[in-house]
Image (cartoon, rainbow, N blue to C red; front, side):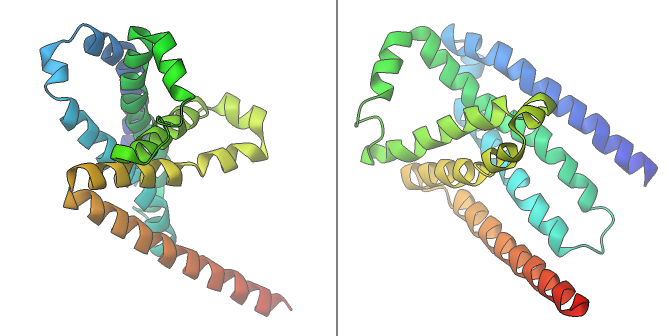
Length: 206
């Protein structure tokens, strides 16, 4: 078990480092139209959704399988996988802003940018929440924001469902639909289990 925890710790450090590298390198690669990156942009977005799926599913699974000593420690990796996922989204967004900052800002405040045409609303909600989650995924933000930190982190649900809906509605990827279904089911099951546990505790302490 000691080596298992250590492996998780090393994986977390690697993921956080990878997230920083993505933020530094990917915007430049997109701007300079490096073929190795631009030709694989869809694959990078697959990484976004796979890592985000892990982030969303692991905590409820840990709440459901409380008897498993191997599932609960994986909750630590939510931060690392979340940083990688959001870093890719933010990196592509940064490339757009760097290429045309005034144009991007002007479009941001138009109704067309937030319309349902071509499911733009879902894509841009995912962009905004990815930024908020990324910049608050650190101990400093947690200390400064206090109770608000956890509320902001709950935007991960908006990030997950908005990005998943955009991909599914735009490209019809059934895997994304499966991700949404699994996350929804395990979240509900975990919520019900936790609620029942609280009720039992209250009943026994009366």
